Length: 131
Picture 1 (cartoon, rainbow, N blue to C red):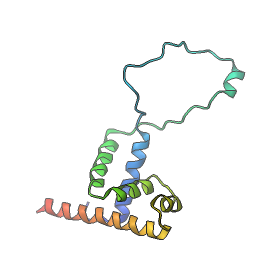
Picture 2: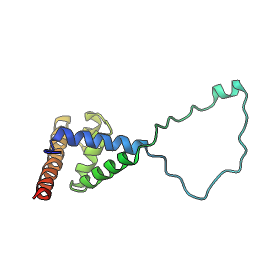
Picture 3: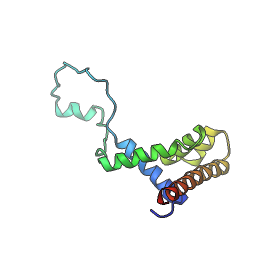
Picture 4: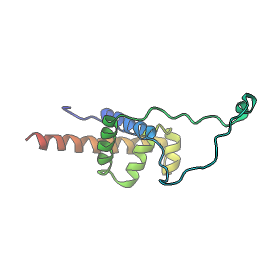
């Protein structure tokens, strides 16, 4: 990639949040149930809890890209990290403004500044590797 801009950084952050959502749930190792599986009647299954939708697990390439983005986030301050991840998880600007106790325009400006910080750091980092 030649030059990083805020749009590409935002897209990569959103992709990383989506990949994190697709990871399998964390479970405690060593515990299992000894209860038998109940065979239910058809009418009983209609009232049962609905199955939780789990998307397909991410590929190793997707996980590597997510981990790369997680290293980028270390360049930001803690509040900027929260802001960037909330937006990557598609929280609305109103919810973000409530979380950070500011108006939506101020939250958008802070988000743009955080993305610009990441883009500048990536561009500076890639230029130093090329030399």
